[in-house]
Length: 301
Image (cartoon, rainbow, N blue to C red; front, side, top):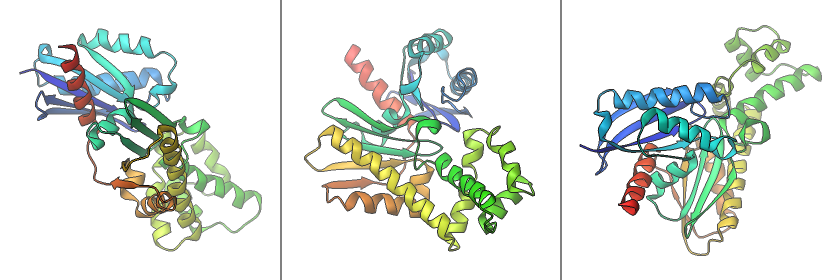
């Protein structure tokens, strides 16, 4: 039985799923982050590990196509090199695109529309009449506003302000220090300058907890995250030149699981009185890899 493997490589984990040609799941594999901009060597190793877990229970020779969506791929310098490397490893037809592209295909079923993703990082991708447009996705140094990393980092920056300005240490800051097992705010430099993006973003649940308990700073931070994500979505909307009713889908734990962020996101977009509908249900992005690979196979056959 021939099969297709869809791969979703994000800033925290890489997921690979093998599908039959009619879309049934055969096997799955998971490994660490697949964002090549974090660390090319480690990300490549993680991608290979996730795919190999899929292949370990399947006849390798029956793999018809591997379609990968990798976070940060748009900004990666050596696209052809990594593509050839992975082709050499698996020896099957292979395509690599930005992770937003396969997530778009999964949630919008190949139709025109916009997908905004916010997990560890953030990006918005729109497809209109065969053309693709992106906003955001600049990575944690140049952007990623509204992402899990960005949210957590703002809380750490607030801690430095409390320290520098001699302000009372907030309950949120105290809880962050407790979680880090530090006694003083000055110690957070040790963590920030050695931690991965995922390790920093892991503080988001604590921030959400404080927001739910009425912490004004935490609440404002989550609302700003939703507004930032709406801003990049509206940027894509304008780039696409949409005029008819379109769908806007969301992906990633920040937008799908944090109600304050999602509500602020929707409210900001609706304030512009556009003819849009929202796709809020989740779907594995690897399914988008399956759809795109199947379409490519059909075109080439």
